[in-house]
Image (cartoon, rainbow, N blue to C red):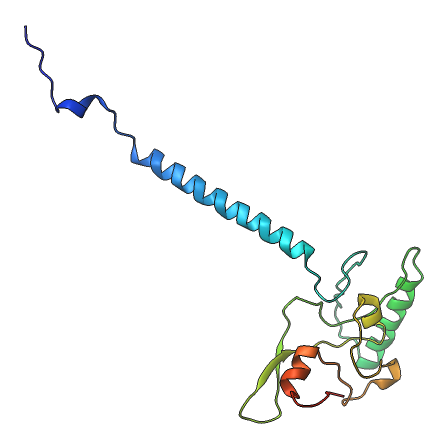
Length: 169
């Protein structure tokens, strides 16, 4: 009696389906990406962003139609702030047109046409910096009476870029 063997010596080894190998490789890649994401979240959580984040509540406001006149808008926000400050547990409240680290519209600030600097701007009230725990490096604090076109607050990095040889103040 003869037994016929087809395929030679290694024929008894089963070939793995290609789909299974791809699934294992993709699973390992996804595990690596997930671990990297968690590590980055931990790093970001431990990083100080330059302002206080603990015990802060951010609320967006949406105005309904009809539009509110600019003078009435200021009164509306002032009343809202007074009501917020009167709530139990609220120590401070302030207004801003945009929150830190959230992209806003970009403006261009420039000392010359050769080197424009793109910056983001935000309107804030006089209690904003104290409420957010942002320290002043130079200059003076501003009050509600300082609402003029020539009052500005700049970051240290922007001041160094625009006025590298002198004080921004």
